Length: 245
Image (cartoon, rainbow, N blue to C red; front, side, top):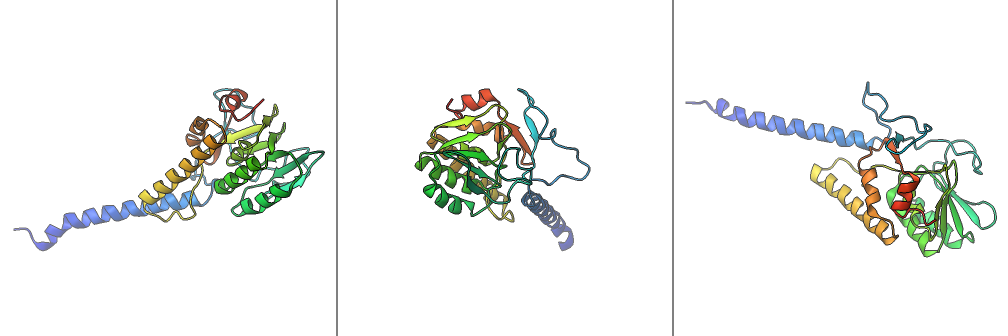
């Protein structure tokens, strides 16, 4: 007859395997929450540097949310840590900087009181939720949106671009998409983390449809990791309705 210890051995092995799986899952989720710039030790760059030219079929570049402001902007030096809305010339205002949590409420108030009819965008992106709030405010206010040559509109920024009643991307301006993070806490069971992601992606798809943008644009973002960015071609911008002219 088998002893009690022998009978319990398979159960212990199973419990040990479950525990190891949970620890590995927690580690993966935790590393994902450290930020978009995490790189596994010894791994090479996932994509060429951002400043390298793109061509159809070769559109994935390294993503750095701390990239410097572009030449010609009113702000010199590194990209602002928070969104800044400031007047430019004539009827234009510049919306630039990283989109941080809480920026939406502040910028929405400024948009409502701004006399500028055209919003120039230059942002590496950030909080998707705040970008959607700002986008809806831009559409409600009847603003047009523009990405100038040498400026960028990346990550969550294209959702603000999509809100313009008229949308222009000048030749040389870069509009890029990639995978997003949704939710604040990654120490969750796997099924809850997946639910969070699915809920966020569903919200983005509804938003794009609301703005008259083809949600198929998301296919490029879903296949591009957070530490890289997929630069849309002029043809793709027109195909998905991201530009009106």
